[in-house]
Image (cartoon, rainbow, N blue to C red):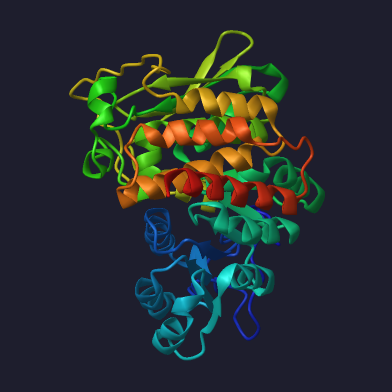
Length: 415
């Protein structure tokens, strides 16, 4: 793999004065950036679509070598036609034949979780964007880390379920885990201002979601349409509902402890409805370093793809000329009890994250199906977490069993 400062090799038959990526003349002192060969896991979701927009904007810097989706085979086939990757994969195997018939000639079609793993394991990628929502993307993410590839993590669940395994394997194999979540990308960038030992506190900001000003009584009557009406971000339905319950912050607390090697007590959540400050790091000398930008996921996606470089981006910039007021307030854990569950799971560690994540995913599905009310998402998740037989140092198979058990428990409670 080329480092960001190494010049890409000249292709056979090409003049030494031609750029190997653009095949255009360049001066002897010019050195083009190393090309990112990218697999996008979750290419049809909101993050994946934004990532492909960023890839198009980056031009020759990025080549898409693999695409994968959970169920949207039609859009995946369209993306394969546009990008012509070596292979594509669909998680839901029932769509395999449809995708195979629709995919362009010469593009290999894979299916199932094993298909995702094969896509990552056999590709010529040097970067994998993990953006499949839920635990389904975990085996493929682990396969990427096993290969020593750089992984852009847009999938909270991989770290929540198996953070200890992922971070240890990344250290052993030499790959980098680069956060794509706007909050953790912000922390990742702010941490460049000091040493890990100098970090006093991390502040994860939260928009507050659509129910920031709602009373508990109003939230009892919240509909699916209400929960999906996010005030600032354009995200997929599961992530948007997690924002409404603030379970997304609960998961991000756990994620931060693994990514940045901090204790749960060093992570605080602040509600920041403008969504301009994406997170902050407080250092031991009292300095507070924050990353600010418009609420557009293309910014952290591009930073992950071009790290450690910065290049012109697609997202707009914050306009300060008209004046802006940035507000911060503590979260209300009585109205948003999911936050308390995040701290509890982060402190216990072990299999707790897998159970929290699995129970929440199942409860969200029940809410989307109309079989439980909005506040029951957190209530069901807490009940299952309390009943869990905690495992301190779980293996991957034990983590997946804990995840499956939690889902079954939620479904049993609501059937």
